[in-house]
Length: 137
Image 1: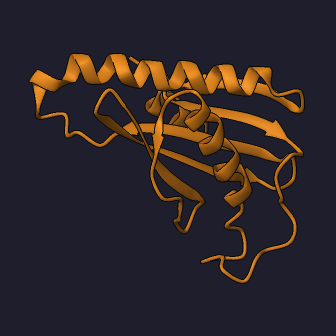
Image 2 (image 1 turned 60 degrees about the vertical axis):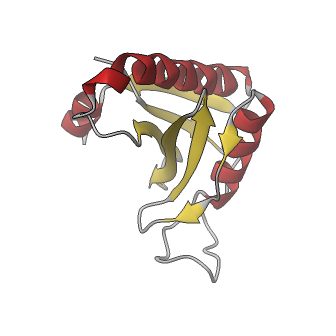
């Protein structure tokens, strides 16, 4: 099973002062989403509009005509732990697209891992499957 959920800690992104545009007061991650989207764009991904959800921020990342959702949000403000996840926009029922989709999803996750690991102030990077992550909550 592909590990598409990653947690990490950092002080790089705002975690204390909510902006007026936040859906909820803990909707942090806009600056993190902008940063990650820009990094992925520099790596050849086509990036869609960054939008807010009630838990954080999301944008699309497309490579080889395959589109994925990338979400990022603060999990706890106490230790500044962030969650980033990648999901396919293709339903699993379309089996004929699944293998090339998985290869591109792997490429996206590898690129995110590289971005996180090369960034000086990001630490405690840990990858999970969706199921593993949900069991840790």
